[in-house]
Length: 125
Image (cartoon, rainbow, N blue to C red; front, side, top):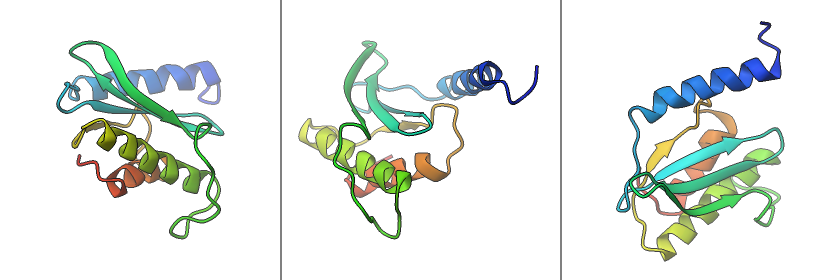
């Protein structure tokens, strides 16, 4: 199949994600922060793998967009803001440290901005 085929790209990302999940596991004390990136938005969820439950989640659809954040604009600023908002919700829920799951995406761009926002919000990983 051609690499431009969207089904093939989804399959390859799922394969990479499975490879990451072999090493990364979330618990109640240290949940897994899963990132999902679409073309327009980014989502993050804190998951307790022991119970198989999502503790909390956030999306760029659910936050207020900011114009400029530390020399970032557009989707990068929205990703940073979403990561920071997720961290604030987690801190309010008593979660201090997490395990980061990049979801099969490269750790660059919006995924990195989301992680940096979560770190700036006070989460340790």
